[in-house]
Amino acid sequence: MKSRLKIVEVWGIPIRIHLSWLLVFGLVTWSLAAGYFPGEYPGWSRVSYWAIGAVTALAFFASILIHELGHSWVARRNGIPIQSITLFVFGGVARISREPDTPGVAR
Image (cartoon, rainbow, N blue to C red; front, side, top):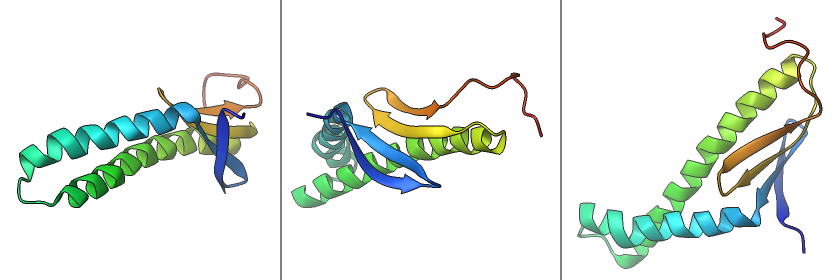
């Protein structure tokens, strides 16, 4: 069984999710749907709590993906190939092919 699933490709970079991401997605959704949203918005239906919880969890991980795409954009701009981006339990990681020659941006 693979531990990573390819979900999409952006700028030719495969975007993957690690199976641990599914656990975190479920926990974030549950935490929002069962705890936070009912306390803040008591008039919503149960389905609304779960739907908005899932959308919020997706937005959270989208922000992590945008962050990793930023790293990838800078690396590619400086001639460093990106192998993939993986979202997992602790956030995300952009796998670069090599370390930069210098710590500063070349351009």
